[in-house]
Image (tube, rainbow, N blue to C red):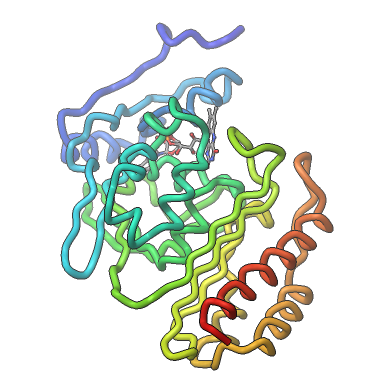
Length: 291
Ligand SMILES: Cc1cc2nc3c(=O)[nH]c(=O)nc-3n(C[C@H](O)[C@H](O)[C@H](O)COP(=O)(O)OP(=O)(O)OC[C@H]3O[C@@H](n4cnc5c(N)ncnc54)[C@H](O)[C@@H]3O)c2cc1C
């Protein structure tokens, strides 16, 4: 028999402090309910029987995008539509801006939150590769206190993560910088909209006088978690950008990538597409640098 919403238990705290006090009661099977766009799908499949939902959607402390000179901090409840309306995200973090625009359609963009996207932890989710490229940090809060975690360390395996019982993600921090960056986000799916990706390719390269200062390639839908290619970062940073580097990168990717096979695609296809995208966008940067 299917769940009906009338039989479910949902508690709505007044503020973050009350939410964290409630979550501290570990005898309850609390599940934070933000936009509910992932949870409603699981409810339909009867995967959440007996859960005590904690409605965090209205928590004002987790809303909004704050800017300071050095950083931009997004509340975990920031929706995709809010990301799309943010001038600072559009101009300084275009990978995240593009990811938000490629997530679902309008209804999902109005209700789905960045915190929910992170905690749902799908390897095919659209914002994680962008967050990896920008070295995002997460603020995790519980009744015991707060801690910052590098987003790169958050996912520990398929659908597992570093949140301790009683913790919420409250904020996501991105560091600002004036340096010139090349940003490329490419979602490969069966169609242009409403697709779950076969490959998510996210590249951010910061170059100063043809020397690479920062190099981030993050990939989605390739493994159990979104991945950041540390080996490319280590091989490329502090190097002159040249055609030999493109060849070197292709060789590293060819050696290291062994993507998953699943219902959406094969590992062989994913690898081929990733190599092609890498070559295509690296050549664009090369041309952009006038070399
Ligand atoms: C039709 C449809 C299309 C979709 N298309 C896409 C797509 O193109 N790309 C994509 O990436 N995703 C897509 N999704 C998935 C989903 O919309 C996103 O993952 C969304 O961002 C989830 O956010 P939410 O607020 O709705 O999360 P919820 O459903 O409320 O929660 C998801 C999980 O996160 C936990 N959680 C939420 N917020 C917090 C928090 N602050 N701290 C701790 N735990 C928290 C919840 O307990 C739950 O486990 C789609 C979903 C649907 C139904």
